[in-house]
Image 1 (cartoon, rainbow, N blue to C red):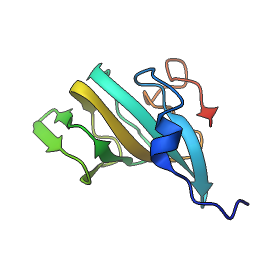
Image 2: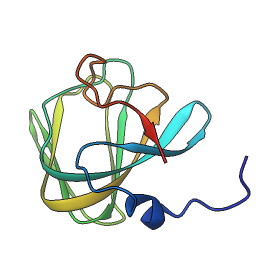
Image 3: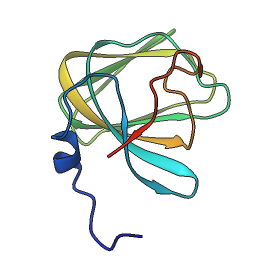
Amino acid sequence: MSSEPIRLVDKLATFSEHWKPRVVGAFNGHDLLVVKVKGEFVWHSHPDTDDFFMVLKGKLFITLRDGEVTLGPGEIFVVPTGVEHRPRADEEAELLLIERRGTPNTGDVKTAAPRREI
C-alpha cells in the first residue's frame, strides 16, 4: 500500500486514447479508474451493478431511454443497475469511474476494453 496520494491529472497525462479506462487504485473490491472520452460510446447496461461517473474536466452527456443527463466538472451521476445508457462527449472530457472489480465497461466481457493499470 502506497502512502502517496494518487494524482489523477498525472495519471491522465500518461495516455491519449478515448474510451480506454485505466485503473489507478482500488478500495473494498472496487477499481478507481480514469478515462478520456470523446464521441459516443455504445448503448449498454450493467445487470449486476450501478455505473458511477464523475466529470473531472469537460462535459459529459449520459443518454438514457427516457432522457439525458448533462454533467460538468465536479458533478457525479450514478446510472442504476440494469438501466440502459450511452455516454457521449462532444469535446474531450476526463472522468473518474468507480466500478466493482472486473466490471466490463460495455456490460459484456466479449466487447469490453481490457483492464489496464497505471
